[in-house]
Image 1 (cartoon, one colour):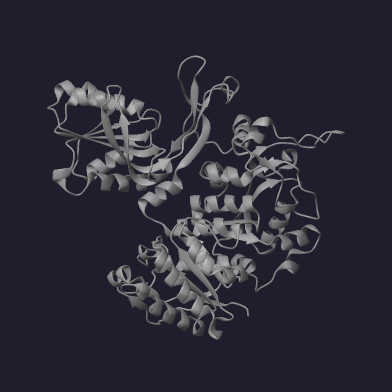
Image 2 (cartoon, helix red, strand yellow; image 1 turned 60 degrees about the horizontal axis):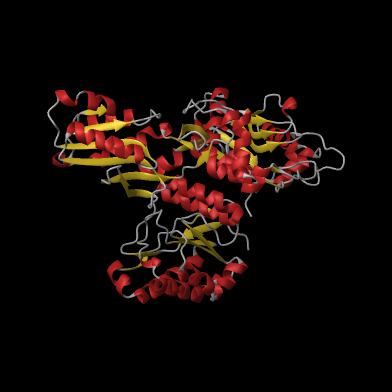
Length: 581
């Protein structure tokens, strides 16, 4: 039976609440991802079946009956049901479903409902908190239905029970749902790969490989700093001191937060030390830094400011912490040379990488001195460094039978997983120079079911707010073979409906890399046949830069022609070393 509608399983702990517009959009995304087409929201006014949270936490079995009743009422309203136990939507107290015994009662209720005739042609999607070891009991109990596709599990961590292809789409849907400042800071933070801050003794000198740029998240950072300063004037510091060694994205939002908090005095680290002899000693000082890495330099600055200002209370806050134990809102302890320990609060944990000069060939590529560069392309050194760091693989998404697979290509999905925000920011700079239309009114069009293009379009969508439409590979190949674009249109196909319904007529075509350019050309013909205006064509890698025309890529490279008796493509030893198993 063809699925046309979806609805929520009306179950909840405590009073059930109707989803707001943001949650409804998220549920519509979930239904589309699972069904493979856009489904209509049933908009049911059915009552929620609930159980008091306190009772459920004490008597986990009490969830069975209301959940079973809610499940049994859904088939009369919709073809696909969504049982939301996610932390992200904040609609259910998920503490209960972190307990193994509660998961078993959940599985029992779901199994009993799905055994009935009413659920024979229905699909159930269960949204869970971040995947954990206890989930295996739930999966074991529901294994037959997971295998048949009647039930799908999706977790807040972005894992799926049935297809890795759709995990990126679900993560993007979660990201659009999460609008707390810390979520937006994490989403907008750019991790740039380069060769930063050489340090250490001769022969043992090292460089930092990542620079963290939060300049795209100034508003979100301001909100987080507002909360850190607090609403109680009695608890606020007498002086706020900030330190930025190379970055310049911290000072402005911090100064704004200090003004909002009653014009708190705020000074740079050097200014605070210079003026210390002139000022009365503050009782309370807040020291704010952009990043804490090893903690050695920070401990030195803490000792300096303590000696100069002699505060009775010193609080230390870092926006980012390398290798923090908690992913968000954590604490870390650092130690000075004299053994004194200091507690450092931080907003977000990040991953840094350190390499020896020889290992990263610093003598060849040189130190990266421009930390917050704003260019829309990769240098040769940057591109091949990405390949070295993230590895190579055989081409997976091949437009067969038109051409064979490239035996070795950069691992674009992994590159985008680690550095997608950086690369998307570069491409978006090119798009912004091509059109004056705001991001939300631009349509991103890419091939369907291609990992690299999917990740790239999702990164660009999160960066800009643009809508994404994916054209099936079958339709693209027909146009490549000479079929008129109008003949591949299907009014019932979701991608055609999306192209027809967009308010904007401005389109950006996206692909992970270009060989002969046939895929891009076919997508352009399809877009033009729909009356759309193609404003830009963007790719990560162009294998035919001499024929690029108006096409923009982050890096263009003409692969060497095959030679007799040798492999047509070879990865260097560094790439082999980092290739994933």
